[in-house]
Image (tube, rainbow over all chains, first blue to last red; front, side, top):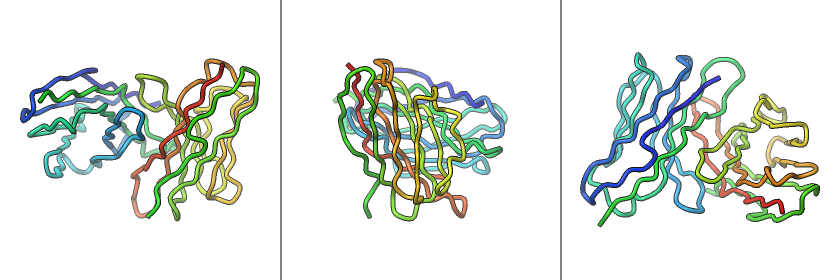
Length: 114
Length: 115
């Protein structure tokens, strides 16, 4: 099955700086890669996603890049704000077989220092 | 519109008891997923429904866990003879699953504590 590794596990940045979180996946059949933000005690919220036919996607201060050859994808947050502080999870979804679930990374605790 | 809802939000039960957790997906979403999230971890897949049938139950840890979705909407996750190791947040997600729409939207979860 799919395996997703995420790093770093914790990340602290100053307000206004950029943050980058990286993930690698194992199964080249994966074709969909979402990112979720989860605040303490809350549900995971989808913030951005990318499909395997696209190399980069941007939505305001958030961008995701995908390198299919190397099987890794990254989340980039620019001009960070204290409200960006949360745990961020990457995930991958297989395109083949009956599996349609997401396989998640272990999460990155992002702290934006004011 | 209304998002995914789950009840109860919290459930405390004694070891050995039976529990049911309910998920109400977004209206019109044909795909429904159950995940389990332990403290400090990402969600782990349990079971996936497409319509009324369980399309993939490979994530269920053992036969004490069972889930149903009889009418293709609301789903119930059932855990028999609960163990302390079952304590976790149980998350439900739904997806439209047509036209290449893969986005999964999560409910708030049920925090299960087995004492």
